[in-house]
Amino acid sequence: MDELEERLEIDRGKIQTSVGLQLPIEITSYTLPRNSEVYIRYIMEMFLEECHQDHLKEYLNFCLSELLTNAKKANTKRVYFKEKGLDINNPDDYEKGMENFKMETLTNIDHYLELQKKAGLYVKLSLRIQADKIYIEIKNNSKLTIFEKERIQQKLDSVQQYKEMDEVFTNVLDQSEGAGLGIIIIILMLQKVGLSKENYQVVSEDDETITRIILPCNKVVFSAVEMLAYEFVNFDETIPILKEHFDEANKIVNAEGPVDRQALFEVVRKDLSLSLLVFKDALEKDKNCFDARKAIAMLSDYDLKFIYSESNPRNRVIEDPGFFKQILGHSERVAYYTYTLYKNCKAQDAIGRDENYMYFLGLFNSLGAVLLAGASKGQKDYITELSRQYPEYGDKILDIFLNRNASTYLSMVAAKRYGFDRGISYDVVGWNGLSRVPDCDKSRVALLHLAEMIDFYSRGMVDFYQIDKRALKLFDIIDENQFKTLSDKIIEGYKAEYGE
Image (tube, rainbow, N blue to C red; front, side, top):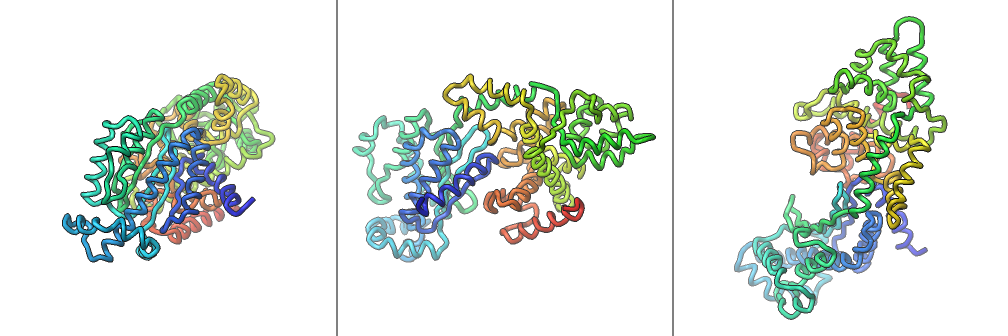
């Protein structure tokens, strides 16, 4: 195995994690040498394989190469104009600069690439799956001029004139900017796989130019995973419970005298499964309840004794916890982190919920993952049987559902099934897709995102660049050192309180 293969093998694990968490994957280059282009292509191919769209690799490899070249050329153009003392936004200067741009930069490209690197001009590949869409983006930090925007729009408007590639080569040639064929050919490539120019976007955001290709997820796989989520949740009423935690709750409710509700709360609030048991009964009395202390207060001693008893048919004690215990631990940490972030956030008014809501939002964000990790043999057998209805994709569908990125969606389905308020159901699924969260809910869900990322970052599962900037902004964080300081402080507080 050579160095590239070893590097790609490590990256495959990162891609699987990022797709599972629906977080962006980015690769940045300042000069984009040939070996970097090859590496970037391999990364995109692995990403498409993980998203079960590997049949698109041949088409998208051309698109990727074209977009990388365009982004690199845009950066070269900026340093070229600056060196010539020309204003790239001035019509006369732009026309004058473009007269010899292509010839001069091609014959002295190393010089201009060095200038790009010194100027901090980059080309970046960003890959992401969100809900039922796949986003492939090429970014560079050279904002489009009005002339470039007009030229791009002209190419997009002209696409409908062409049906085949040879028509494009015969009729389109833009000597000043380069061939000028790329955009049209990209659209024709997308049309060959059933897409259109609506799946291609060029936008300017935050001093970046972003060229975006939007692909649908594999419809068969996506719809099948959705179906499995509903079937899984409705298959049985049992809730998986960690034996050691169940025994603690059982001991408290069966002690002599009235149930010590404070002692019970202290045990229940740290365990998603124990909390779910008490919420399930409390929600029948108050559909807006999302505080375990209030839920415990609503129920009689008799109710609590039954809920946390071995005779309760909902209880399914997990004797061999393994991964199930790890997920419960993650849930407990995220609850504490979310609560602590809320208490230290200057924008509490924009969050719209109190500290108790935020704590349990953090706890229940792992609802789907806990249910999957504690799935019974009957549930697994049933889901396996259902997945076999899809001969071509059955194994992939089962793998996605049990091991990949189905748990977030499953959290929403389960929250609705157990009777939680609709707003809670949507809050638990928005943390890894803040761009899709309504503005009125963004600050609240951003805190949950930050709490999740603190835990994943501390375990080396994600990198700083994958953290949403909108969440970081709540704490005025602009670099990794600031984030690490905040993260370390919160983790130290958790260890001090929980004795870990």
